Length: 116
Image (cartoon, rainbow, N blue to C red; front, top):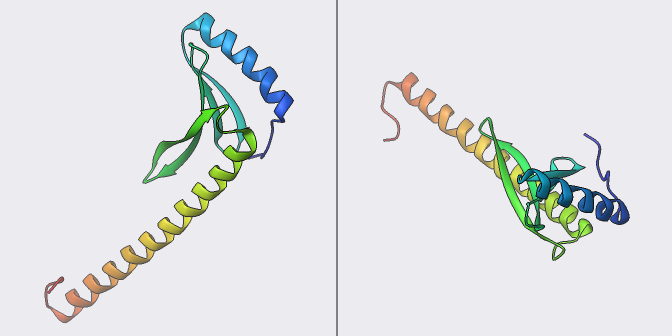
């Protein structure tokens, strides 16, 4: 997916349109920046940065902070850090799952239960 679709001025213009749309519909509006980084605009005018990611086959949101406290640049940096942390955690979990499967397989091959 494309990255960094928004500029600061483009974000402000999109935010004004999204605030009007959210208020008119009384529902949330989304402004996408790419790579699953989304600014969710509420009907009351507030907005929050959210990174959507997948874990275990489910789509999960990770709130990065409220706009304008978290700028577009900072939201991108936080999203990159979160992606790196999630990838590292997934690799560690995958290694643990593989190790556990190997131990269970070895125990079954030897005819003894695992864990001992």
